[in-house]
Figure 1 (cartoon, rainbow, N blue to C red):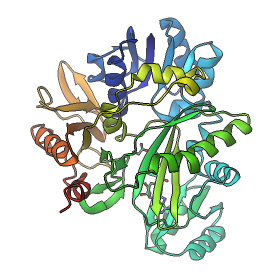
Figure 2 (spheres, rainbow, N blue to C red):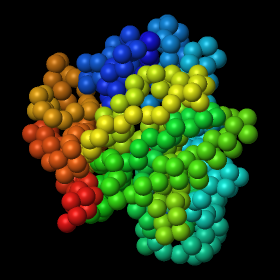
Figure 3 (cartoon, protein in one colour):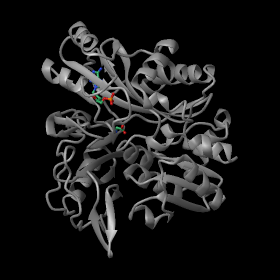
Length: 415
Ligand code: AMP
Ligand code: GLY
């Protein structure tokens, strides 16, 4: 099978790695990719935001399957252009990607599908905003309606700060605060059938102890020893199946990865958000644990063949991934400095994200530079390996959280 992977982040590096381990893969192309992915795939320059350019590359390469990593091409309609060209695509249509592209749309689907989520109000002016803030009370949750790379959401007990954030966008969703632990649980869908992946937990805030602003994600781990045993079946039943059914009933079937960001509240599972693609950095802990050949799984989803695909197989190992971020991330990352020490990181995988090669030297080019995933017989071992390994990598001013998977690894030991 010839596959074109679209994207250039740590998620795509992890996807590339897993795809190349599938014996049915004959060629892997990636556009635009990064220096890490270049070791696994043939790279091609591409304006990923232009659906026709993405489809034209897939046609020129004569691939069997296109896998789209990031949300922007999906929301722009890349999957529609690829399918129109007669090529199988893992990634939802423009209409279905609105589950991520618009918070308000996602809420309307959840309402019609009977999926549990926070109570909310969509507001378009100051008086509506103030009324909603006072209705739901502190802590205030304010979300810009459109795509915001994980930075459109503010959760704060400061009413003035909540109002200030709300007034920055023409349309905001203000909602009830959910206080349960957060879980990311992904479903692979062919438009009708959904197969859940194992859950992961992501660390959204930039600093230890969940302090500082929200980011795209600073680290992740999987599995979750503290989560209920039936979390996958429960999420399938309450969230993934009804959402996929509702999208099909609307005439906009969702083919691709449905990312459910959940809060496990005292009143049961509630959806915090949907995304229309693999999470980052959750993918960097989930895929290294998946034994099932990935290219075959994604091809089955893209061609409506999941019903007969069978059960997924998982490794027994635990995985922990830690993100190395540039100084100043998320507000004003400083980029362009030299990265050293990523070779020979025994026992771990380094997934590159914001990196570029300049005259043969690896330099940072984004806020989240790379992530290091450790695998182990339990979270404690996986975590120790990941921290050992990342401590050998140097990049001026860079930082990482020191508490990724810490509580879970302590709970696992019964301490
Ligand atoms: P979102 O982009 O909707 O995932 O929001 C980003 C982050 O904000 C989430 O991962 C949560 O940590 C937090 N958040 C969003 N909505 C809520 C909510 N209703 N209650 C509590 N925290 C929330
Ligand atoms: N890890 C959060 C996201 O991918 O949106």
